[in-house]
Image: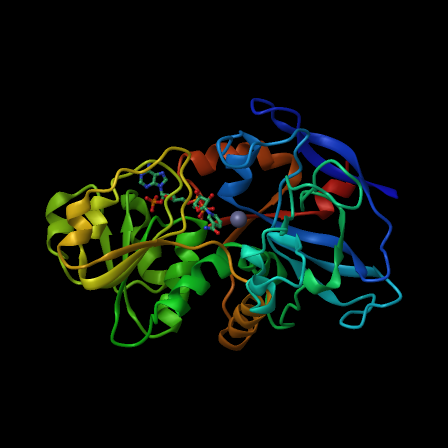
Length: 352
Ligand code: NAP
Ligand code: ZN
């Protein structure tokens, strides 16, 4: 075992502060990664503040972070995919059983024994796993991704969660040329959703509560921008969408969006608000519409998404911050004041 610098929260009401955590020495299938950048996902905030206590209670201290890009420092004797010096990335998962039907289909996110990057039982060290707000991490090579060399690494880090979470349902629901697609909430996930829907050739509308984001939405690839608190603007789109991706982190009225779907249209929730959302049956019955959920993506699809981003030069729009600004960044996330992902420069951890 070795000690690594990190930032952790001691309770649901504590700020994140500097600490040292234990990491295992790499076993034969592991790689040790020196972390260069880690994105800040709203899930980090939900977890640190124990907002998902009914489903996944937080164990403290909590070290969040699951949008990790870094350089391989060491590899175990049986590692074949990576060598020291390679760029590598880790997303929301670090392990699974590898044998169940889900894993065999490359859908590790649904494996009953899947280990999340943080706040999941750590089968090596006991306690829970610690995430990417740290100088290094040790991960089984099966869960380590390759980063296309042409991508800016600060902007590539958020692809590991915000990227795959929006890419996967859009692929599954056939977002392509000729489809009208909506993205609700222009935050970290939402802005990646806009970029992918655009790259897939769809007609893209952004729904936002923030009038100040309108110009950015067009720049990011939207064909239309709808201020969702304006009922007249919303009404104009009734019954017209093939697919809507809802990436909102807080309570909101999803019925307003169900009514915008055409017959057989689908609304996929990727946002995970703390409290249950109310669904009116009629929004689904009329039009035979469907409501689904989606969570990240499997390892093969995550690599496919990274390679797609390499080919199309897609990264997140990031505001790079030092780790010392992480608590401020969380407050800004709560104000929807992020353009459009915070990416922590982990060199700042060394300076402390
Ligand atoms: P984020 O960057 O904070 O963006 C959320 C956006 O939602 C905001 O920028 C805002 O967009 C909108 N919003 C916030 N409060 C709202 C309210 N009260 N009413 C309406 N709109 C509101 O968050 P994120 O990192 O993209 O994550 C979004 C959600 O997805 C979180 O709940 C997160 O936990 C979840 N998530 C799920 C998965 C998965 O696998 N399913 C993966 C990652 C994250 P506007 O300013 O444009 O309105
Ligand atoms: Zn995330």
